Length: 91
Figure 1 (cartoon, rainbow, N blue to C red):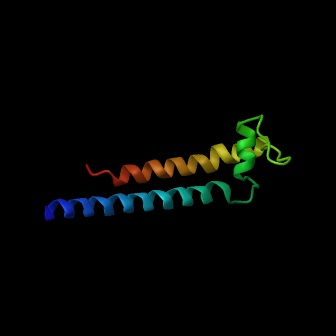
Figure 2 (cartoon, rainbow, N blue to C red):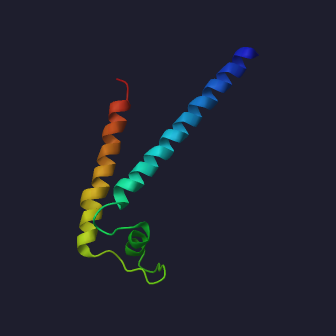
């Protein structure tokens, strides 16, 4: 019975560490995508994606900002995440 409790505690700690790492990844990804010289924030991205959505007269992204968001910032975060995931896999 004691070994079952030890396994349960080990798995609980492992799940907790994975959740913390996932939260940190999402937080750093958010900062990396939305912070920079171009004024891109989550509201403007949502207004651009969903045309009928409005947040107190928030204007959608300009074509230049869409290029910065999709081609530069989002691509960098996605490719960095994929590279990190592939490096973490044990072969």
